[in-house]
Length: 343
Image 1 (cartoon, rainbow, N blue to C red):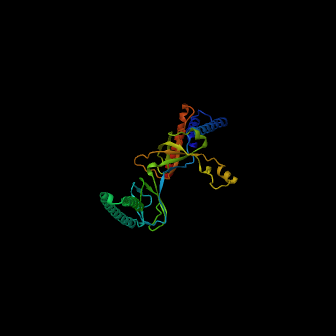
Image 2 (cartoon, rainbow, N blue to C red; image 1 turned 90 degrees about the vertical axis):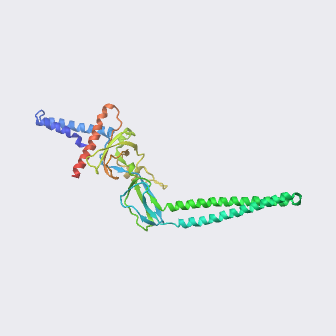
Image 3 (spheres, rainbow, N blue to C red; image 1 turned 120 degrees about the vertical axis):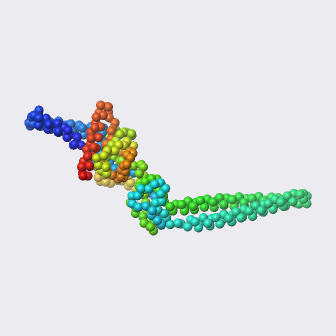
C-alpha cells in the first residue's frame, strides 16, 4: 500500500529540486503531513470500496473427489503417478477381485434349476387340465369333488410357478449386483483432473486416493470485515500468483463464505473454555471470498499457488469509481515485486 504514495513523493521531490518549494521546517511539516493524510484517506477508502488482500494469502483451490475409501480391500495395481493429469474414465487403480465371477456362475446355475422347475410345473398343469377335460366329459360318471380337487391342484401349481418366477427375478437382481461389485474393482477418473501425491502401493489394504477437478479452479481471497457489506456476486476481481509473477488474471466474485472455522462449535455437550474463545477471537479474522475465473489459453495456474487479489466493490456514489485504481495498482505492484524477487 505504501507504494501508492511514490508519485506524491516524486512530485514533491521535483518541486524542491526545481526551487518551486523551499524545503524549510514549516514546509516539510506541511507536505509530510499532507502526504500522511492522503495516504490514510486512500487506505481507509480503499479498504471499504476496492479491498485488496494485503496478506498475500489468496490461494488457488479446486474441488476434489476422494476415490474409493479403502478398508480391507486389497489394491492390485496402481496405474497413475504423482500429480498426473488424467481424463474422465482413465483407469487409476484396481482392486483384487472378490470372487464375483464365481458368484455369478453359481447364481446362473440356480437360474437354470429354477427354469427347469417351472417347465416341470407347467407340464403338470397341462396334464391336470387334460384330466379335468376328461372328467368334464364323463358328466354324471365323475364326482364334483374330484373335479374340484383337480382345479385346486392346478391353482396350487400355478402359484408355485409364480413363486419360481419371483425367485428368478431375485437371482437376476443378484447377478446385476455381483457384476456391479465386480466393476467396482476398477477405479476410474470421474472427471478430467489432476492426481495428488500418490501414496497407494500394490498390496495395501488401507488408504485412498483423490483427484482435483482442474476444470473448476477458484481463488479464495481474504477481505476485511469492513468490506463485507460492499461485496456482491459478479463484481470484477483481479489477482496474481507467484507461479506467474508479473502477470494479472481476471475473475468474478462467486460468493462470500458463510462463516469461518472460528465459528464452528463442538458437537460434544460442553461449554467452550473462556480462554479458548478469547485466544481464537481476540484478533480480526476478516472473511474470505470465492473468486471464479477461467484460465487463459496456454496457462496452467497451479492448485495451491498463492498471491494477492482485489475486488471492485460496491461504492456509495459513482464518482468514487476512481478508487478501483488503488486496488488495481496495489495488486500490480505486488505482482511486480514478485517478478523482481524471482530474478
